[in-house]
Length: 439
Image 1 (cartoon, rainbow, N blue to C red):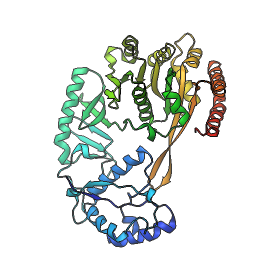
Image 2 (cartoon, rainbow, N blue to C red):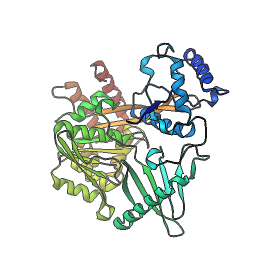
Image 3 (cartoon, helix red, strand yellow):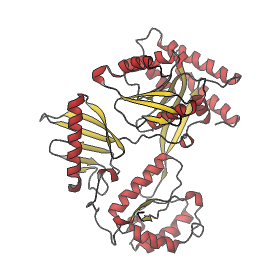
Image 4 (tube, rainbow, N blue to C red):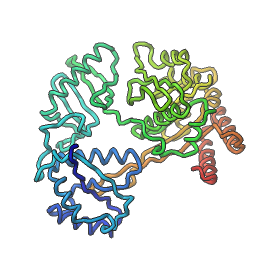
């Protein structure tokens, strides 16, 4: 088994704790000031966003400070137990990495064995005679030329992209590499050569227990009697896809049913079994009619549970609303600053229907709005995002008279397009759930 070394880190929790530890670490690392200390450290991990942040930080540190692992191992012995440092145990998390990449002294990033799968790269630009990478650890600028050690691998990746583009004819598609899913967008530059922009999909299904949304929304989504649209809304990068796919998969798992997932392009790996449930994951082709055609096909599939990647045009929104009125359960996402804005967005996209307000009022089951709040600052100005979510459920539990009243009021406001009044109803429902011990 490959040996691993812990990377020692610290969250600036309180001044009384951080100052003495800072001084101790400065002495141990033999650097001149705390500003030079790599500050990606032991923090409370309560969300997937924090875990991803730590893993990316650990990779960056191992490349920029090869001696860090060896020094940290000695420093841990000097620091003693967390109790001696007066740090509560719940504030600690282990970040581990291979010792083979650790040297003796600080140096430039080691790239002799660098592979694309090992880097926390978000965006890659592959042109005819260039390869650019965004936010590469140790790079001098946010967008820099790819390291020489990666150029052959990236050339192979570009060849795969070119082959898929010529074969499918779609400007956007998904590419699976080393367990990661990349969303590929194709442009043709002024030299008539295709340029491929690869974005590594951060979306993945997480355990339902780690999904930080209101409990009453989870229960409504997973209730066997729920039918209609489960809508997750928020700004770009707020984790909408993670929430929607996690709820979709958990629904399949608990109901032991077959679901159909439609994406353009695919951003997460949902295909296959989930407990006793099963997902058929389909790449939507624009040349074959896009979401509209595939949603029409979904009605013939007899799948009652459907995941639709995003409502972004009139045809997909209209089909989703129609399916919700036909007894299907549709999970989907839409951009929106708050819950009323998201509903207004769907109504504007569904104006081709005979009665969009009435159909959405009947078809909407649960709507969740979430945003990332960057409130926990780390030294150096870095912050850890915290998920804040609100929900409105229109599917009350059996026998819940107060829930029935909330549902009727919300549907009436949507039907009459009085969406601004929903905010008061959302707060009232949240307070009622908290009072029942079900926030």
